[in-house]
View 1 (tube, one colour):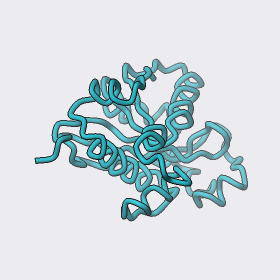
View 2 (cartoon, one colour):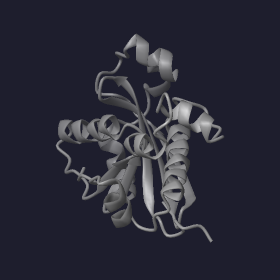
View 3 (cartoon, one colour):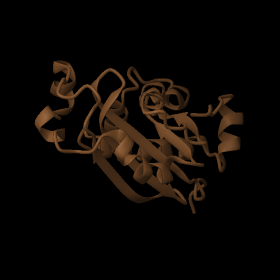
Length: 188
């Protein structure tokens, strides 16, 4: 029986049209350390029809892909149950959590009552001998196959990587994780 059998969390990943402006959101619900469901939404960004050329090149989402998709505020009631009163996990959480915060602020929506962990920061403490800590590099090292820069696929990869980190650390609770690594799990 794995040490981390009882971990419940939601892995989250945004792709953006421009800095902190989402055009795609992927969520992965993990219950008892198993992936329960994967969700993905294309989002019409507030900067529509503008897309930063570099962002388009990275994730391949273009204005035509989101022209008739709902804006974030129209999706919030569907998304909120997944992120409310839970632990969120993101790879480079500072970016993804800031996308969430800034988007909620833009639409005058309340922040969810949730805390979060960063799989990138934890990886730096778990695998100290690595030369890089990007999601694609670490997943390659851990034999986790995924299609990078697709929000649902990145969220799945993040969830799997985080579970490997917990297993490597041999912790059985988030409290133990925080104590062992001397880290916090800030509020969204």
